[in-house]
Length: 79
View 1 (tube, one colour):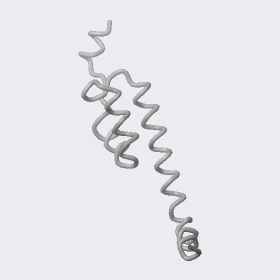
View 2 (cartoon, rainbow, N blue to C red; view 1 turned 45 degrees about the vertical axis):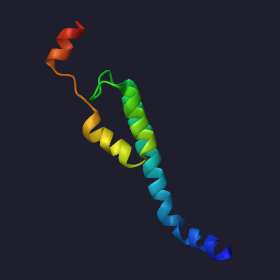
View 3 (tube, rainbow, N blue to C red; view 1 turned 120 degrees about the vertical axis):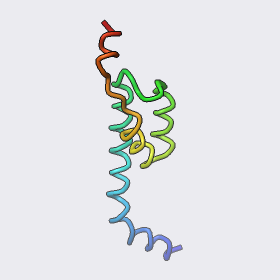
View 4 (tube, rainbow, N blue to C red; view 1 turned 180 degrees about the horizontal axis):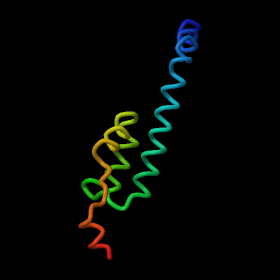
């Protein structure tokens, strides 16, 4: 048991930055989904689930593929 705890303590300096990165990506991606009017696929709930369930990869996939910038057609439809 002490061997397992010492291994975890040795790896802790490497794990803390990864955990902080994961949490930062999670929070930023969730805030972006909530604020954004349009997302790729049109379903915010699906993107929220992808972000939360797939940890580091979910937010990265959202930032690469899920964010949809509004183009001129979307602006004209809103007016």
